[in-house]
Length: 364
Image (cartoon, rainbow, N blue to C red; front, side, top):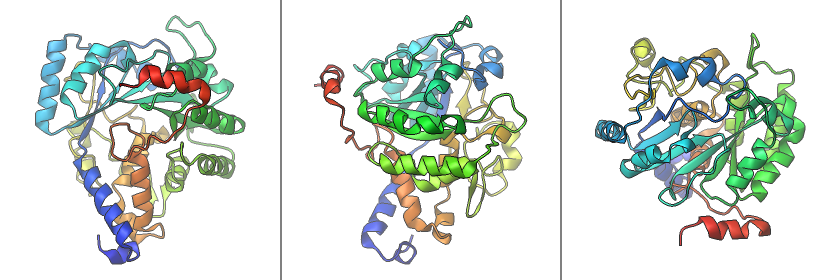
């Protein structure tokens, strides 16, 4: 990228070269670690879509080890482990840590994840709506009984844990709780990235009655907590509206599809980029899933999918009013979520009451 495209700034030119080089190094795939989970969220794409019964999970650590070796040989160096609930199976996670350069797990937060041996594993903690909405949608045991305090439990389990980053699905119902929710995450010593809550059981899951109000709230809170929130304006706009100056998010442009799934032959030939080497693997370690999430594109604004779309659009940033500077800031912000990334900034300061937790969990 020439200096002309980045305003002639030597500093910006160097930043672009560095983050572009790092981004190109990442070859990620997603792995459903298990069919088991310790809660049953309302509208969960995994259970509601029957993914938990579609394939039989591999439990043998030797077979898992061999599969990971095959993935490394395929060129994959970054693993996203989802479920089910990954924290129920630390020995399986350890197999990925032993062979993959970078590992991230996605958790509901109900169970703490060990530190010893997993110091460099990024922990993405799910949160929905803020306030009472999180318990309403997620605090449901597998037997159907409800409980309270899931967010409080997650905060306790990951207090002052630099690995933990909340993936906070925002929605209109929770606007009045956004400030308090992000403040609690900040005081807990964790980071946060916004996701977008798609309403369950509706004909138009992405419809919101006041898009400008949600946008304003998300921008305001992100600006209020710049050391904690890794959601830049361009990402927030794309996530909530589904649009950028150059196009609209959807199947035809989403890069987070399984490249070895035969259904995507025409999509991969349409000229829009896909994530190199990316597959989403079912728990049988043989079946490739449609994509990184439910496969229901009409209701999807998955944070990782939207981010991947933007990260694959550097040339379009350069040609738009956002400029390549906008892409650099987006890319640096995205990579700062992960404790294994050189862009991770461990500058979130825990409150005094969290200091003992810091001593307890961090390696010597």
